[in-house]
Image (cartoon, rainbow, N blue to C red; front, side, top):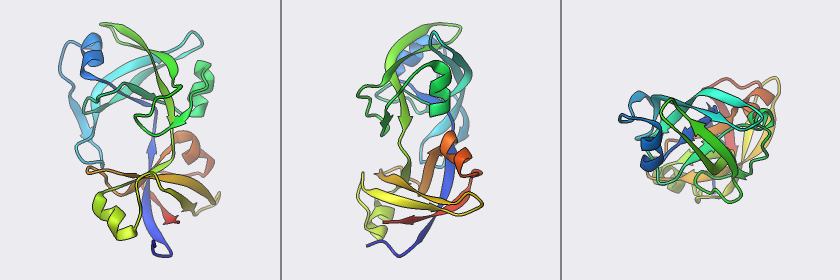
Length: 189
C-alpha cells in the first residue's frame, strides 16, 4: 500500500509529436538533433519541429520528442483539438485505437496519419519507484493538487525502465488548476 501521501513533481506536457524513422526521413534530410534532455531517461526535446494541420486549422513549430519511436503519435490538448476540428480519444502513449487523422508537414514533405490523441493524465515511475510505492503499471491513482484552484484528479501509473518519478498533465489541465511546471502534488491510491 502506498504511504498515506507521496509528494510528486508535476510537469506540463505541451503539444508534441513522436515519429518513426520512416516518417522522420520523409519529413527531414538530416538526423534528429537534441535541443535539451527531458527528465524521462533517454528522452529529449529535439531542435526539429513540424506543422500539424487539418482543413480547420494548424499549429506551427510543434516540437518532436526523441528518440524516434516504433509508432507515430501527435499529442494535443482538447483546446488544440477544437481549433483543429478534431475529437481525439484520450489514450496511453502508443495506444492509437480510434486516433484522429492529422497531417504533419515540413518544408521537405507531408504525411497524413491516424495518430492524434489526447494523452491520459499519468505518473511516470521506474520499476524501483513502483516497487517502493507498491504501484503497478496502468493502476488508477489520484493526484491531489494544492493551491488556489485545488482539486483531486484521476491519473494512471506508467511504469517503465526509463521512468522518472513525475506526473504529466497537458496544458488544459495545468491551466484549469493554475499549475506552473515543477510544482508538487500529492499522489494517493
